[in-house]
Image (cartoon, rainbow, N blue to C red; front, side, top):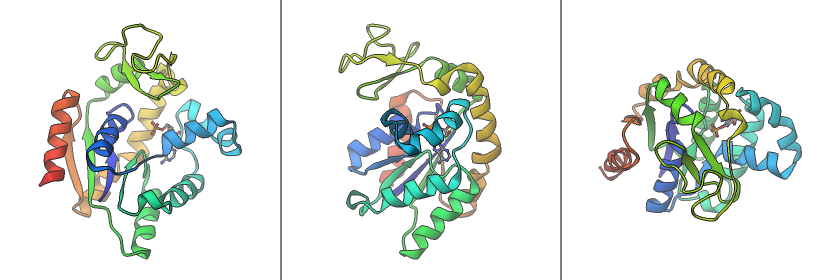
Length: 214
Ligand code: AMP
């Protein structure tokens, strides 16, 4: 099964990806995670993308497509995968379609995460991430026991550079201009499932799971 999670930053794609991964044993391909890891490792790729990511712009398509092609060819992706944060614009979506067509494959579901931008700003500005295990917290709805430490592994919690308020604005503009048109792209291909991402985590996932079971 191949699933695309499509929605604005902060709509819960990463959290849902982890749940689907647990329930269906599908690998998660998150371009954001791959790029952030490249930055922390100090790799050439990391050096190329750090400034772009810090201001909330999109990394060039050619770099992203190279990452995706390489990741999809790995053995664990043979039975399918969950795409989180890719495709991000029409060019990437068309390239993905072409890649899959070449091997007679197709996407099964595209979940569109519907949520107001006010809620997104609240979520992103209160998001904290564990430097060690990558777990996400929200200082209002899912706060850690200790403001600076992960409940699970004790790692340090930090605010992503691109979760600072000035960058959030740009990320939402970029989303509106470049990613939102993919809703119609996948609607036209009869793959789109709209889910209400403003619901609490549990109800939201139940809804999505019902679609996967049906
Ligand atoms: P995310 O973790 O998905 O919110 O991604 C964080 C940042 O990584 C984005 O703001 C972009 O700068 C970059 N990024 C992630 N995925 C893509 C993609 N598919 N295309 C271009 N840039 C991306």
